[in-house]
Image (cartoon, rainbow, N blue to C red; front, side, top):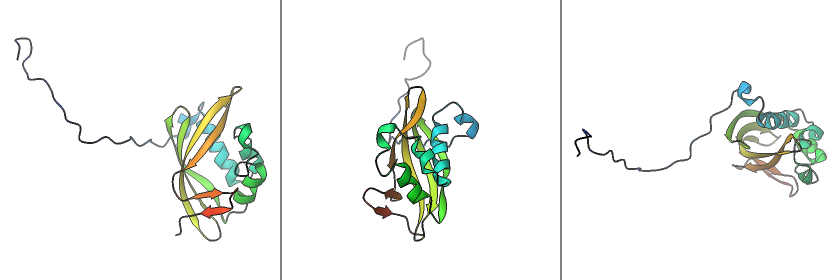
Amino acid sequence: MTAETDHEPLVATVMSVARAQAQPMERTDEYGTTATTVRAFYTALGDGQGDDASAMVIPDKRSRPAFSPAGLTGFYGRLADPIHQVDIAQENAGTFLVHCHYATKSCVCNGAAIITTTMRNGRNFIQGIRALNGCQVLLWQNVWGCDQE
């Protein structure tokens, strides 16, 4: 110890490191962010409007069955309980964690996904959706995965 300090140096030990959980956004926090595009995408799906939902996806992915207007309308338009976004949390400027709920005639899904967004020509688009649990519909493979309740 020197005359300039009255204490020993502080030493800390890190026992573990965990990824911080993103906190759900308030709607007013979404204004001016790409979260509005993500929320509008899920609203369009819930209304069975595949054309509107597909328009929010980057153009080069809209021809894939999972993101095409017909594919989105065909699945989401006839759900027993329409999809709705439960919450959205921003992980960084272009990445969001979304929780949603929907039901088919045979299963219920309480899903989570990481949504990545990008800006093109001054407009926000959804670039990718990565399901985090078994609740996903792979339309191009005609495989349905749901959490049974």
